[in-house]
Amino acid sequence: MKVYDPAISVALSDAIGHGPPYSSSELTSVTDLAVKYSTDLSAVGSCTHLEIAIFIGCDPISFEIFNTLRTLKSLIIQDGGLRVLCGLGRLGAQKLAFPRNFIEDLSPLLELKQPCEIDVTGNPLSEDSYCNVLPELSRRGHRVKASGELLWKVTKRLHSEGVPVCCYRGRGPNEYRLCRPRTFLDCFAGL
Image (cartoon, rainbow, N blue to C red; front, side, top):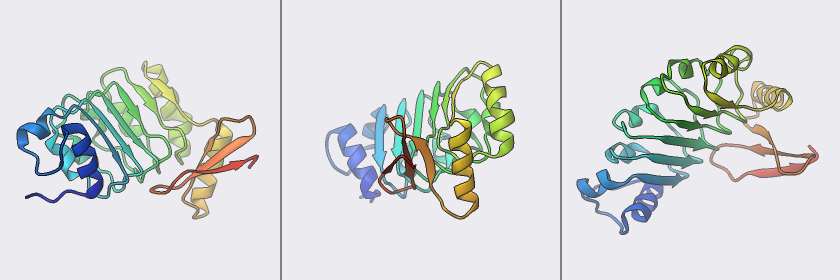
């Protein structure tokens, strides 16, 4: 019997309706998958008909596991350790949401062929990515959501000082939040 990461087992059990073992036909029938705090996403590659994939607090993440997922429409990776977007251009997804990760370079998103909704809020984007790549993505017809300049600069500065957190706006007018991968969100009102 294949042993899965516990978080993957929970997600697959929710999607399939029972615990392991899972047959290959059961794995390929999974279309929606939500995974929280996994450290091994290799089993996701077996879900070849996946349309919606949500990964919260997962680390590490590599786009190699998504190479077999040709039906993927929506990919959400948030509050995790995502750093590199290489290989993303091969995905045909219509929604790519990567809020509160460690992404600096957005240039791989320029490889996208289809119009896409893109969310990169709360990432320590490089100056080139923030000032050049984001506007170019918008110019190409993508709907792009990113942190405002102040929050981007705070996040980037915290990272440059060795504090691996992402700063983003909370619900209140003076509420800001800090997030660190694989941990729960912390709220600091009036930061």
